[in-house]
Image (cartoon, rainbow, N blue to C red; front, side, top):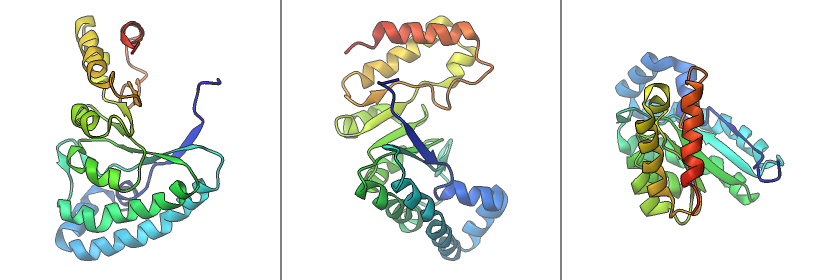
Length: 213
């Protein structure tokens, strides 16, 4: 597959790792009762997980996915200043060995992280993978000429939408991403197994008909 990009990544960069360790209830309770204390726990976890990034820096993979569910559907989980004190500095430290070794870093998160796109870019990433909740148009305006943009097609449209809705969803994304040299259309959260085959094929058909720049 000469046009494919070999890549790898890690799922539990910072916030996702804390969710896995503590669960939502304990995490939200601890962060709410003692934000500074929980911030120090975050720093300790991030220092531990950095070894994975150092190993990835030594790998042959040219592109690294850095997954971290830093938000949920409605946006930020914590106060924005908490992220800027405890999350983004740690992500930046994770990416430093990757960038130093010439890797390309793609940040991945579920939910709506629109308010943090500038913070994430400042961490040194080369691209963004995002759900339809995150603002594709804003990303295209600010980073469409300098960064890779991936995703934004709504999985739910393929699961239960009509052909007209599927076409409209593809047209929406391509209309915005067409002028971005690094935009890859994609069904965010991938195409689940219960997607009607005819919908997946129709989605691809519409994409192939519209994708030429």
